[in-house]
Amino acid sequence: MSTAESPPDVALSVVVPAFDEAEVLPAFAQRLRPVLDGLLEQGLGGYEVLVVDDGSSDPTPVVLARLRRDWPQLRVVRLRANAGHQAALSAGLARARGRGGVLTMDADLQDPPEVLPRMLAAAAGNDVVYAVREDRSVDSVLKRLTAAAFYRLVSALGGRAPAQAGDFRFTSRVVVDTVLGLPEAHRVLRLVVPDLGFASTTVGYVREARGAGRTKYPLGRMLRLSLDAITGSSTAPLRLASFFGLGGALLTFLLLLYALVSFALGSTVPGWTSTLAVVAGVGTLQLLCLGVLGEYVGRLYVQLQNRPTYLVASDSLEDPADRGQART
Ligand code: UDP
Ligand code: MG
Image (cartoon, rainbow, N blue to C red; front, side, top):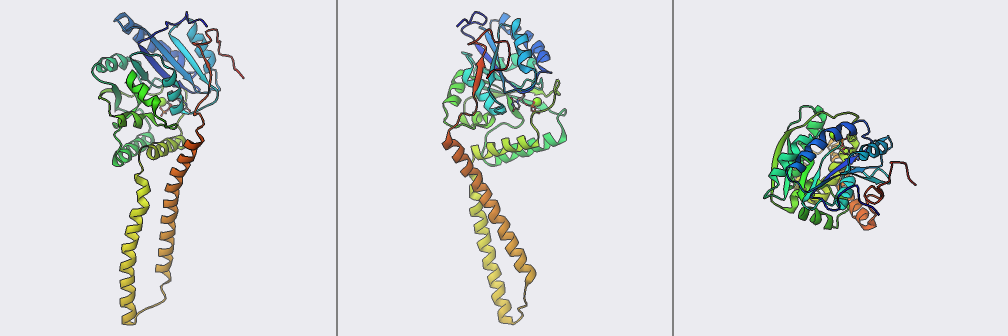
């Protein structure tokens, strides 16, 4: 095995999950490289840019192989199949060599590379640096509304994630190792990292528009991420059923009282509407509570199965001759 192309030991790993990002990757490299090379000149002890190709089916592997030809610090880890953003991030964290820590960012230039030096400067004395979006007017109204609702829900459930912080984040080596040591498979990193309680700070930036290509997060995927995040960080929804039960008991008591009084006064009439309303209401609540329960049971099941959340097909560090051809 020859690692002549990249130094054996690096101070910083930049982990970038990429799924079908062939259109934007050349521009991404063009903007990221000067920033990192500038940091090298200022004394950064070596870096690697670890792009995790999350099972892309477009020319992403070919584009990456081409970029790697004259950018020795670029490393490509390809996953066998599309594992999803969070699993791709975990794959990157697991393989990152950065002694000092790992910086994660998106490939689509929505996380501007020019913020990196400020984030690394803020890392002195902190284990975690979140880049938070001060202005996300480029995002769609739907995206902003759902994001706002999501962060409000998370904090209501006791989560500590800073609002407007996605996965644009620096984590020191000790945080990376702590995260990797957690037994949880389907972790949502943006909630797990704040919960660990390491010293942290934030750096503001203006969210840019996607450089090229389309979003890989349609509504369905966003919903799934939210469900994973909520069930992964809180069991509060399970208590919902108990609260409904308590409220229901109180209501039943009042209703009974009302019925008895009506009976005593001799004014009972066949109440079709009220019966229907009660039956429908209770049925809906029961289904809802059952659904909540199901979410957690499903999570338990998946964790019990303990399947890997991603499979690595190749790593350019181990196979420097990799030219981006499809593998079997
Ligand atoms: N991504 C990934 N696997 C997926 C979906 C997305 O690795 O299954 C990557 C994608 O290439 C990008 C980042 O995750 O680098 C964020 O995705 P995207 O920009 O599409 O999400 P948005 O910014 O629209 O929320
Ligand atoms: Mg994006």
